[in-house]
Amino acid sequence: MPGCGVPRSMNGFMTMAPSSFRPPVFELALLALLATLWGASYTFIKIGIETIPPVTLIAARTLIAGSLLLVVLHLRGLRLPRDGATWRSFAVQACLNSVAPFTLIVWAEQSVDAGLAVILNAMTPVFTFLITWAWSRHEATTFRKFAGVMIGLLGTCAIVGTQALTHAGQALAGQLAVVLATICYAGAAIFGRNFKSLDPIMPATGSLISGAVILLPLSLVLDRPWTLAPSGASLLALIGLAVFSTACAFLIYFRLIHTLGSLGTTAQGYLRAPIGIAIGASVLGERLDSSAWFGLLCILAGILLMTLPSRGHPSAMRAT
Image (cartoon, helix red, strand yellow):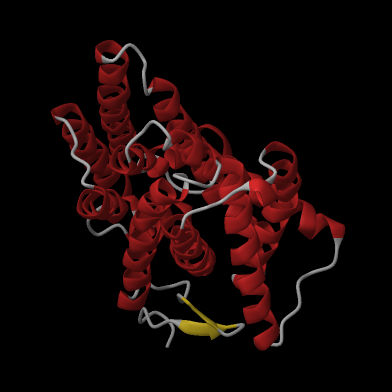
């Protein structure tokens, strides 16, 4: 019913009515699930790279996830677009949302703890705001959001800067790689708005297939995967990474881009950071130092300032 915040159906997916001011509970539950799936990915990666090289791990991740989504697409009676313009857009989305950030994070986690990687990656909403403010202008930018950006950047500097000063840059390159991956994710969240006319499974599947096409030749040349002997733990981590943290997560991600917008979707960083830290601590036994905790608090405070709606302001509530 228009104006009552009740979702409506479109192409088999539920989308928010344009006049609704608050996202329905189901959308918020999906946001929490997405945060959990992506929070777990850092631990999956840490286990996977013990015996599988970074490029091969990510190539297999995108290939398995893309193949699964192709099966789902077929079962739903849908077909991927065949025009070149759409596939070029899928390729750009793949580079921003999988090829570049996945590879950077996997490479980084050879020297960076999974918990620290998830904290730095929680900066996605901050970089989404900066790109929106400087370039796309597709959502409102306010002084309060700008203040949130500054606080979030302070948190990142506290983490990366302390590492650079105290450890002579032992893990600095890896941390900067995670920050660069975060910028890619921010660009992907904004670019993903170009697929609003498509069923969410279309860009999810098309971008993963495009990513696999880009990464598989690199894996064959660089890692010669037929010579590898991955452990059972690494293979299980790869399956979990591909099925849950990629295939399922991408379906939810592109749906939320439809319903919550780019800033609202990247706000899953609220939950992803503590969830990722908790999983890393319980499975890998990781512990964070005081500068990492201070940085996490700054980043979460900044994201809150950027994404919470202004009281009584319908447009801000819709954007959030």
